[in-house]
Length: 112
Image (cartoon, rainbow, N blue to C red):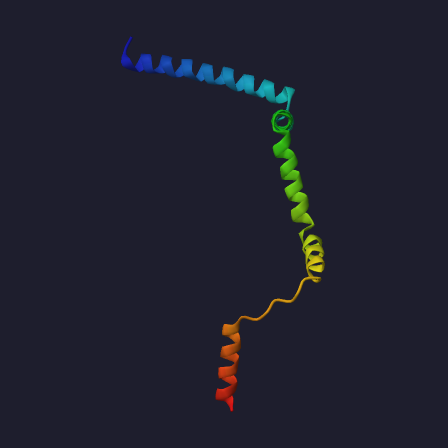
């Protein structure tokens, strides 16, 4: 057999393999569409992720509780800060620093 005949035989064998695989792909696609495959894959991955999250949450209950508490405090931070501010009203007012009083006296003298 010459090199040309060997190349032709190899090409025909490769073409036969390609046609066989193409037939398999067409048969698979006729059984279930690409859209159906994507949806099934997404559902499977989401369920696996949810199972993993549940397992991690069971192992770390304290961390999950602390995270939820932090999220609640963050969500209600404005009312909590207002509540704290109303509780501090009963305290004595802050006295100005003496250094600031000297500066105010100096600026009043310069203005006159």
